[in-house]
Amino acid sequence: MRILIAGCQQEISSFNPVPCEYDFFEYMRGDEIQANHEGTDSQIGGAIAELRSSFGDDLELVFTFDAEGIAAGPLSHAAFERIAAEFLESLKPHAGKIDGVYFSMHGAMGTTELLDPEGYLLEEARKILGNDVPIVISMDLHGILTAKML
Figure 1 (tube, rainbow, N blue to C red):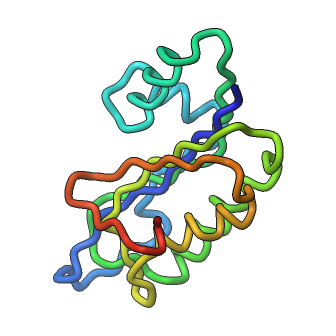
Figure 2: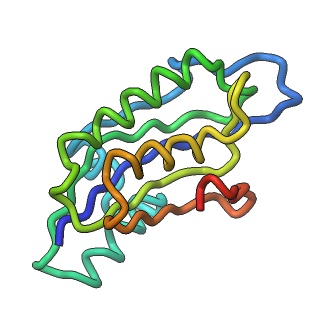
C-alpha cells in the first residue's frame, strides 16, 4: 500500500489588515515531513500513526510537500499561487503510482482573491492523480468544508 502524504495549512482572519506572504510559511519536502511529524500530535503525525497501525509492514509512505502558515490576514494571492504550484508539482511524479492520499489542511485559508484555496488544491490534485485514487483530508474543527472540496 503506497500512501502519499502532503499538507497545506493556514488560518486567516479577514479582520487582520496585513496580508500573509510566502515567507510566513514553514516548508518541508520529502522525508523532512516524516522527520518533523512522526511521533508528534500533529495532524500528519496522527495520520502516520494510524496508517502504520492499519497497514503495518504493507505500507509505504510517500512524503511530498507541506506548507504550514501562521495565523494571519488573508494570504496574498501571488503567494498562494507560488505555494499551490509547489504543492501540485510535488504530486505529479506520483500520479498512477499510489494507492491513496492524505492531505493535511486547515479549512480556514483564504487569499486576497480566492475564498476557497483548499478546494482549488483538491480540485487540481484530483486532476493530477485521477478519479480512482482515494483522497482523504483532515481539517481544523472550525474549518469550512466546501462543495469544491467534496
